[in-house]
Image (cartoon, rainbow, N blue to C red):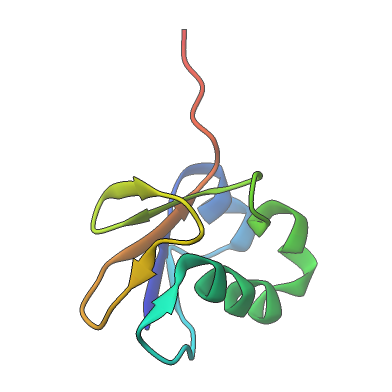
Length: 81
């Protein structure tokens, strides 16, 4: 499954997207864990609470379902002012 990265998370990981091997259907938590396995040096940045997840461009929690064909993205928390 293809996973996208945005903003500072993309810069830190050094890529805009990656492929992870996750049996579908899965949860966002399972995708997150596969990413942590693939990028152990960035485990803290990818951890729940440290990066946000979106499925099909909708912000979701880690218990959200991921199905075949879904777009999954991770990005740092958004701040503004």
